[in-house]
Length: 73
Picture (spheres, rainbow, N blue to C red):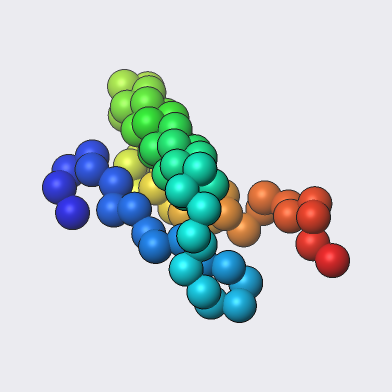
């Protein structure tokens, strides 16, 4: 993966099948790219403010653990 380049996944259903709808795939990829861009900007801000890079990266990695699936059955 090139620096700053996002390695897009093959999106799958909960049953493990490939997601087939191109519009859904496009939205998921666009959302992921927006998250990447925002995380990049946040990292740059953190570095400019003297934050420890390793700590910041760990906080970003842990972010996925605190978001809530409000559609979970």
